Image (cartoon, rainbow, N blue to C red; front, side, top):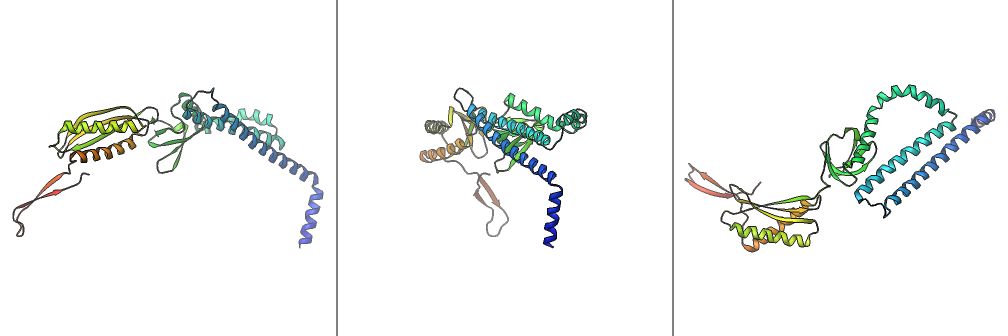
Length: 297
């Protein structure tokens, strides 16, 4: 059986030697061409990175990463497109005929590619208008996360749980960028009605001023705004701090800790809501009242 198969293979190869030689030559050229395309993409990407990192190019890091992402996409798409055209030429497809026919077929394909064209155009407008960049924390169409990549067709957004959302640029309707300006840390602390309000406000101001001296994320003014609300169980005091973009949550957590420690040292209580429960018609506890402490929700 194997002898017959071997003889058949030799006979077929002898009969179609020219065809097999041509196929092997064409496949070899395409493989070499693909390797050359990959090397060229790597070289041009590195060159563009060095150009954008040159000191004479004065742009911020966020903008630099965005441009790097865009340039890399353009280089990759362009070289792969040229690779496909050259591969077709190697396989004896007449590119001129295909391009001439593309004018006729383009009308039919254009209707099906409207969304792709819209993605490309919108992507260029997003980049040129600098709506957002790589590393920005944004909300796009209700999805909130960090921009990891901007292409000429897609924007990739990583949400806080780790998933990466790929959003076509043409579908970007509404963008909220949290990374462009400073953020405001809002610290609300409730105190007992018997508390000296001026003393409590002074302690809050002193504590947050001390934080500003040691925390580089606080870059603006500390403002103790005073009484924010008279609530059922406490008086709500509010203070604010101007912080670097997206650092306000860490500043708030640290401020709560420091203010709690300062209030404890000064003997100022942060009240726990009190509830009065009255029990009637009971043989064991006739007409008694009970006061129950309940944590705030």
